[in-house]
Image (cartoon, rainbow, N blue to C red; front, side):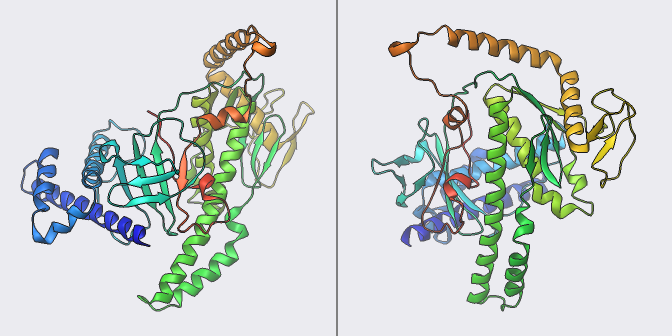
Length: 425
């Protein structure tokens, strides 16, 4: 309990420093002036001597400096987005942090001298030794650790470590993926991944928990308990969805040399009548995992233009059969071939992916062939070293997470499904 209070104090101090710095930058902007990062750091040092801010010295100074670094990063991202130097959606200017935010976090760097003890505890300055449940061993010396508290009052430790990319053995299989709602994904080889519908399965329980929350008086302890129950129910759904996406993406990257998907506009689809089902499927998270793991393990990943008529073309003769309503799951082409709608679309996506990036596929396949031939020339017998294949290779450089046993209500082990992740340098 004392460590939770110490962490709460650190969260609050970091939030105050962030808000003070943001207020100073806004006031300087309104006055037509500029304030440097060094000036903000100097003001932080001086504020610790003021009686109203004396309690800032009760937490690690590194935590407060990292709060200033987060503000500088937020402004940098905003300016690069406004000037068009940053890809992706527009980034809004930084806003004040609230004590009621669902997510609180602090970061310790090497300067703070955090360490993992011989008893596998995480020692943080001015907080103490924290018991953690490790998902796996750290692959290298961490450069920083971020402590995160989520809406369900679960604590996570996210380490930044350096991980070397280890290409997987070459696979002769290539696959196109058609994402959908009736089935989560259909592969060009005919494999069908069923849609788990994690939110739909517990929708009734979530509705009852939300109704119970609405009946509680604002500011009461019973309302706080009800809010925690709603948050725990939602994180269970999010954890299950993330775990499913990790397992499926890992299996696909492990078994295929090249993977192609359709570049869907998920934001646009989420504004239609199937918005809840689209969000429940988690297509963006799944494709992002495929892209990240493909780059890490030497696979080819590509996206096909969203306007490509994958459901209208015949994968055999190439004839276009026109638009088809969603309830049409099979159709017969003029060439006499009867197609399953989703399998045919996946096969067309695979062909379109090859047409868009044929050189990249050939280069990766050639380099993988050279590596495979080199492996075959290694000595065998007692002098040969055992090699790992398949999923064990992926486990070498996967995310490194640790969670605190203080509060972890999810039925899925938080060590394997938490929201924190490792960043590679």
